[in-house]
Image: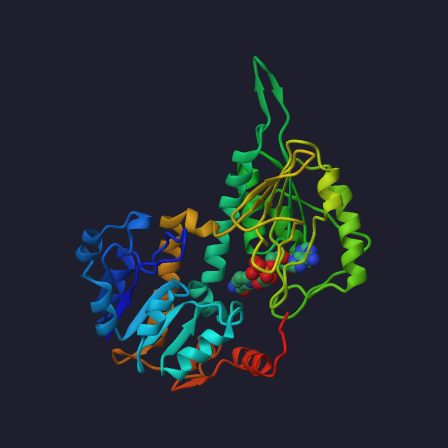
Length: 386
Ligand code: NAD
């Protein structure tokens, strides 16, 4: 079986689906690995290093014509999608729930689409395949560095002959994978860190990292299914925003990471909250995306300075800005998933397998992933999922 890695083409995307170390692992398991020339360049992995690990370096055209399985980080470009043929498999972070028509198109052409976003994350055996977690870890780390670099003062307490600088006060909103990594990173830089989440069960994790957990009196616990949060009611949302505003105003740096599956990210920092912050404060919105973000007015990948001097950074694709580490982790995730699905040297699709049930989106001309199929049905009936 030939497994191929394409060069990512999305703007700013510097990650690559396999690194040389994982090429050697797949090669050792009896798979042939093809790498598109230059695929690893954005993360400093050369064609020569892939070749030394047992890969064959090929052009995009040769790759598409020879590959049985194509590995990507994110959704491939339209030209690649159009070139895929029946019987080929595509594995990546395809995010089918954001655009179910992609799945419909791939099914129609007989392509087997497999997306790491759908992995059942709480299964212990799936943890080494969990790309959402590995990339959120990278993003949480980088968000703190971005904030520190935009902040005009120090993060740690510094006592020098020229005076004493107090430590920065950092607030992390949303304490899932990215939030916890942000807390740990800000603590390592010496900041005083507080954090809040609607799932109070994260309190112990926050405290174990040296953060102080903030409990709101106006909003109760809001845990949803599968370890995620549920969407708040309008009344809860307004109470949360109002009570958070007082806490936000007492911090120098706020990093927001809140997400609710299948919904637009909750708005946690309103215009009023931004107006209450001191000049020179920094906000990094990791929830920022096409549907909006956790912070009023934030734009993905852009930095805005409010009239009262608060820098609001829409985080954009942070893992792509730490490309070597993010690629190494992603490569371990995707290669472990691939090897889980290979039997006798070929891809063995089995929707009854608990991991495959979450990740296989299309097979044999059909969209078999239940949530994607339901969304498509809703889509063709003219409904909306948000
Ligand atoms: P996520 O990206 O969906 O959300 C980030 C955080 O935002 C969550 O902690 C959520 O509770 C919080 N949030 C949502 N709405 C909010 C609001 N209005 N106000 C404040 N906070 C809000 O979450 P994630 O990082 O992907 O993790 C989700 C869950 O999956 C967590 O319970 C995590 O521990 C769990 N998980 C488990 C495993 C495993 O068992 N191996 C692996 C990864 C993640």
